Image (tube, rainbow, N blue to C red):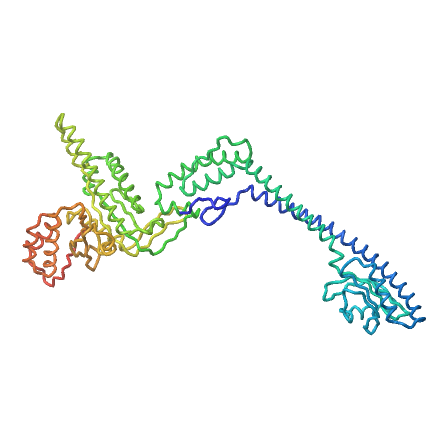
Length: 565
């Protein structure tokens, strides 16, 4: 069964965490709030970056214009002095004075790709992006000698403006690293993100605490529903001190519905077997289905029931209810499932309850059988006490004498097991849970043998083999090999002697019976007769009649054929 426990902050059912509704509300609101804030600020930053780029473009264009004018002036000086290196160094030095970023770059590049000059810091021998030069040359051929471009370098992405200088026959380029241009806006964005996250955490905490208080009875209701599911019964939810809101109304409505359903569920439990109730509660449906399963079947019947019915009349119902009240409780207590009740007979199966799979099904059935005998004995003792109380004051009337004889309830129990069909049969209008198979009929036949051998409990060889090795409490003594009516093969049956409740004399008699039975099987009826005649246990009387009144049948194989059910 799943456990209800706490794992961290959340209540857990099995391996599944139940997230509080208040947490879900806070998370959803917070997520949308974060998305809204980030989206708004992203748009703001995007617009800011756009404005920044336009401003940087204007600044670069202004600086490029200064470089262009300076390059023109230096060209005139070059014509006069003829010192190209000196004037180009001066152009680069003048360009560097206006640069504010470490990655800023100014260069004069010939259409061939060689440099006229370049500023310090970024010092490649040729343009890193060959396509840039191709594009601006092509643009010049198309009549555009200036413009702006993005281009990649080993140092990162650059944005720059260019202009063709006709006197020097070079393209003057002034560019800045994008990381430098966007640094300030990125810093602003980081600060905004931190502020948003901090405010959201504060908002989530305050909201969560407030919602926990507001929705505290949601947890009360969900925990109560879980406990009901585990117990498979509906109870009322404790709504004391609950506020007058929609949640409390749901709880009150459930309590009203639970009162009606609980009555119906209680009735359903009384008319259906426990595993069917569990399946209906778990799966919410019961289908017409079944499967082959290995189960142990217990069959019990009340002896002399016809005489009891004739004597007690309608009062037989009270006696049956008194008997079944104890019997069904015993069976359920040992993990059995009551399959059917037909008048004085009751059929139970063991091994079908999924919650009791760790127990030995045959041992559970045998323990139930002895408990059933104890309950019947207690009922007889109770009736004897009532009789003795009456006889102390007066003699019993003939009618009372018959009644007291009739209520001396005695039962026989037969147990067999094996592969049977277990499931639900019928139709969608009326269905019943049942167990079908040869071993079911065999349990009934074995119970019938308890009257013949005068034993309270008889089990099959399957039950004996299934139990042996599980406990030392029982010793299984073979009773006979019988061929019941309607069968073609013999079946060994055994008496499960409870050694804890038996004296040494009884055990010794059964050991003597065991030896006599071996001689009986071997056809040595003379020696078997001696053994049986020395016994006082009731089962020996059956064999005394067999071996004392006739000779060994011709073709004797040890199997006794029964002529009645």
